[in-house]
Image (cartoon, rainbow, N blue to C red; front, side, top):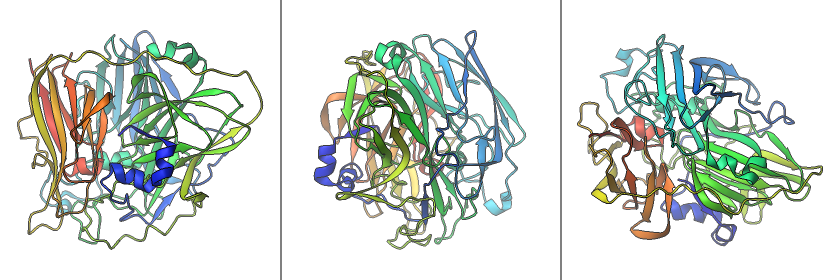
Length: 541
C-alpha cells in the first residue's frame, strides 16, 4: 500500500477507524489464527543484521539454496521452516546500477509429503507442488525473459537454475527484495520466511545527510507456524473446517528475530530501510515519541522528506525512513491495532465463527498490549536512546523519481474478482472473473507506450469483504486517482492496496519501457495469488 497517516488523524479517529478508512470498514481480523507471537530475542542487546554480499567488477554472483532448516528466532524453541541457505531472512544483496545479478538457485527442499493422488486433479487455483520453487526480484526494472526475472521458470526439488539479470545503467537507487514466485507455491514459501533485501545504490545514497546516517536494514516478516514451531503443509482440498494454509501462531520478526534492540544517541540520525516481506499482512508502524521522515516508497525517492507518525505497509511494500533520536529513554517500534493478516482467510467458510481458534488466545511470545490512551500497540523492536554525540541534520531536498509519462495509448479496467458458484463451498479468486491459467492468452501492451489502468475491487457483495494488493512486475506505476478522485500529488509505487469495499478503486499510469516479454500482475496477498488472482502480461514490439 505505502501510506502515511498523521498522528492527528489517528488520534481523532482511533487506529481502527483509520484502517477502516482504507479497508472498507471491515475489521482486519484473526479468523483462523490462535496466536500471533512476538517476544524477546535470543540476544536482546544485539540487532541482528543480515549478511551483505556486494557486487564486484560489475557482477553480483550468489549461490542461493532453498532448504528446510532449524532457525533460532528467539522463541521458546527453534523454528523449523523453509529457508534460504539455512537463514531467515536471506542475505542482503547490494548492487550498482549497470551491474549484472547472477544467481545460482539450488532447490534442496524435499519432495512433497502429500502424493499427487492426495492432491486430486491438477488445479492451478489451489496450492500445489509447494516445494517447487523459482525466484523473483520484486521491484527491479529488469527483463522478464529467458533466465532473467522470469517467474514462469520452475525448479523442482533436486534441481538448479542459473539466473542472469542485467540491471539497467539508469536504474534508480533504492530498496527491493527477492522471494519465490512459483504459482501454487509462493504463499507457502514466503510465509515460511524465504525472502531477502536487494539494495541498488544510486543518487539517493550521495545526499550528504543520507550518506552520513547509519544504515539499518529491516526485513519485517510474519512466520506462520503450528503449535510445535514448524511450518505446516498446505491443504489443497480442505474441508469447510480447514484452511488451505493452516497455522496456529505467527511470529512477527525483524531480521528473523523477535523484538531486537537498536541503540542511538540523542540527535543521531539513522536510515531505516524496511520491507514488508510477509505473505499478506498489513503492517501499520509507529515509533513512540518520534517522527518517521519518509525518503522513498518502493525504491522510488520522494522530492523531500515527508515527516509523519504512522506508516502503513501492505505486503510487498518498502519504505525508507530517516529517524532522528530524541531524548534519552526507551521507545518501541510498534504494530498498531491496524496491523494483522489480511481480513479474509482463503479456504475458510465465510462465517463469524472461527473454527481455528479465538484471536483472543495468545502465545507466550506475544507481549502484553501497552495502553496509550485509547490505543493499544504491540512492540516489534526496541529503540534505546543513550549516550551523546554530534547533532545530525535531515536533508531538505531529495533526488525525486518522477520521469515523464508518454501520452496514454490505451485505457483498461481491471477487476479483482471474488465469486462463488452455488454448488461451491469456497470462493473463486480471479482477475476479470477468470482464475489464472497458463493456457490463457496474456494481455499485450506495446513496448514504449503508456497505459492507464483502473483497478476495481469486484468482490461479490454477497460475500465477506476482501482486500487485495496489486503488484505488477518490471515497471512501476503512477497513481493518479483513488476511488475516482484525482490526487493533488500522484504517488509512484509498484504495490498498492484495494480496500475491502466492493467497488473501491484506484487508477494509475504506467510506461512499458525497455523490456519486452511476459510477466504477471497479481494480488500480493499471496494466498489470493495461489488461488488464482493473477494475470499474465506480455509486452510486445
